[in-house]
Amino acid sequence: MSGHSIGVGRLGDRQPTAPLGVGLWRWRSTTGSDDRRYLIWKIREAEKGRIPVGPRKTRERNGEPLDVKILPLRLEAEIVERMDEAWRSRGIKNRMEFFRRALGHYLTHLGAEDAAALFGNASAASA
Image 1 (cartoon, helix red, strand yellow):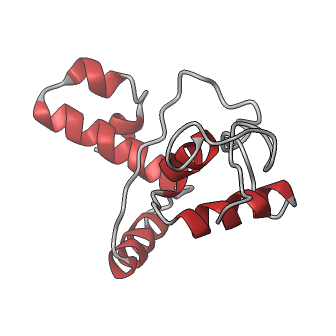
Image 2 (tube, helix red, strand yellow):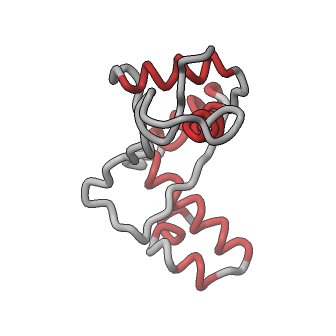
């Protein structure tokens, strides 16, 4: 593949400074590939604007406080359906309210009254 010089900038701007060239080494770290042809193709696609380049954009927070953490919870679909039926039939407004009440109730059960109090009167309402 002589004639292809991959460097820091666009193709052809600089001669390679390492066996794969600096630019290819950077793309290698983002793609995980060692295939020179693939990396050259990937750089060309980026130059044409067909693939995003640079750090990934994060989701906008739209007024969400920075001191809030989002907790991942993965459950099987059937379990979620039954759980939703249970809290709806007991007049709980939404799933978030159900989780808050459940967490407060369980923390009270564990004897962690201070932590349970952070959930407001959710634990008292579920008792």
